[in-house]
Amino acid sequence: MVNIIWMAMLTIGIVFAAITGNMEAVNEAVFKGAQDAVTICIGLISILVFWLGLMRIAQASGLLEALAKIMKPIATRLFPEVPSNHPAMGYILSNMTANMFGLGNAATPMGIKAMEQLKVLNGNKDSASRSMITLLAINTASITLIPTTVISIRMNYGSVNPTEIVGTTIIATTCSTIAAILIDRFFYYRRLKKGREL
Amino acid sequence: MEWISTISIWLIPLLIMFILLYGTIKRVPTYETFIEGAKEGFGMAVSIIPYLVGMLVAISVFRASGAMDFFIELIKPGLQAIGVPTEIVPLALIRPISGTGALGMTSDLIATYGPDSFIGRLASTMQGSTDTTFYVLTVYFGAVGIKKMGDALKVGLLADVVGIIVSITIVTIVFGSL
Image (cartoon, rainbow over all chains, first blue to last red; front, side, top):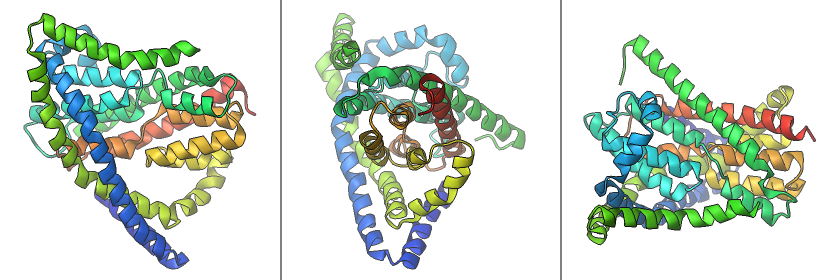
């Protein structure tokens, strides 16, 4: 699936440029895209280093476990394959909490740590497990309580009430997160039926 | 409504303080533990590079060649027929693919139509309610070396579709169209 989409984006782009005589833009886009990617990763270094350090303290002090215990009833239903006292659960929950408060910078390192633990649970295979797909689904739907960036853009453009979209955003994000979980379940049971559970 | 931005400003510093105090009470050597965990950060960021370069080059070529605009024009009539405002179509399509692209487009829509217009509110809600699926997928799986994504992309993109439909519906109900 990914292979096809990736290949298609590039080849369709190049063929399209050939037809419209836009090939110069493609050349530029190749280098620009690669450069942007590296810039983003370099920018991630500082965030990852700091938050992973802090998260290690949270883990060593038992804070992650405590968090996992509080949220146990919901979490075990969402991630039935993860033992409820496993470190993965603590990371998953801190990732979800950080997302809710719009702390994207803090959410990413925790999500990655959760992935790492889920990979260990999955026997270090290089394919995505059921729990990994669920975690991703929840993250792409990104349940948000306070959309900080949008509010600041609205302020910049002189909105009378910059935060009036908070309500609609919460409803939309809740619906899309529930949908993500349901769609995730649907595909999981379909995989089971086909007998090719990852 | 200032309290919302106040919360956002206070949250991270308070979280840092809480983790540190909790660690100290539990007799964790905070600084040394911090360094130990922080060491992983660099390697992790570097390991994402190949995945992100691959993905962003493809997206960037697709956009720069004009292919993306072409496809947007192609499906616009269909989306319009089911009640999606034309102005919002490009944003809806770019939201899962490019975070910076979507942010730019949201600012542009808000600047053009005004933050308190129907389009402005809809763009705000859409921008706030979903994340960049391709980016999240690439970074999370890239960092831990997952190459076979399974159904993850399908699930993420379908959830985005639901998010967009819900955004349009809810903004229409709450603020009324136009």
